[in-house]
Figure 1 (cartoon, rainbow, N blue to C red):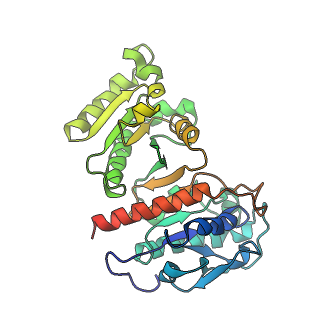
Figure 2: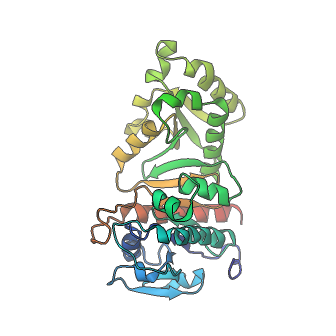
Figure 3: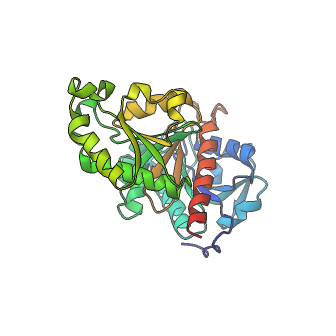
Length: 333
């Protein structure tokens, strides 16, 4: 760790990782600064040589220097070799990992407010550094000592949490255990209070089957597992709706009745949010001892280095990281 924690309540910038340098992270970081300036203070951790040639930047030596920078603040990390846009470079892998670790360290030390991560390329990390994690989320959980984490996707009009994520649809019923669903609901509920500032969160829970099983005619998971679990959690004081038919949960009037939706599998959660706001969705990791957000897109190798990158999702992710970080800071002041 570097420097010293700032006093409680002091302004802190968000730590933004450069991600895979061959992707659009270096391109959209500067575009995000053009929009946000110091209204949402952040700094980029990465190699300044990987930024577009015409991108002005300010080298900083500590996070607080970013609070009044007049161009993209960069905390330099030397990657050793140039960036080749669109071509993953395994020789950069150890540096990509080190940048993530640095962002987490600065946030846990109190120098940064939150972590926002640009997209990484898992194969390049595995090939170049033996990266043993499926992605950012699992690595961040490891850095946090094995915290139980949950993935949320959020935009202005919707927050969704898939209880199961990157597994085949045929594997979902077996993976969807009472223990897993309970942990997902409890982690989401706590985050809505601690990170989103809600005093009494309302959570809608989707059924697994069409029409939430329709009384057992289309599946019994709702009757045998989901409903009893929700009843137990309601008895403990949670405001839970469901299990509900997923096809009626996401129109505007329904969304007004809850603060987050728990879905049973990946597409049940991601289709509605990407339909509502494809460019502005934010990936949020719940359950960490620090705030972490990320744009909801990949490395976009096909447009890296072409000035065609859309910074909308990164801008939304930085704004959300700042808002969540401030909410957590104020709650624990």
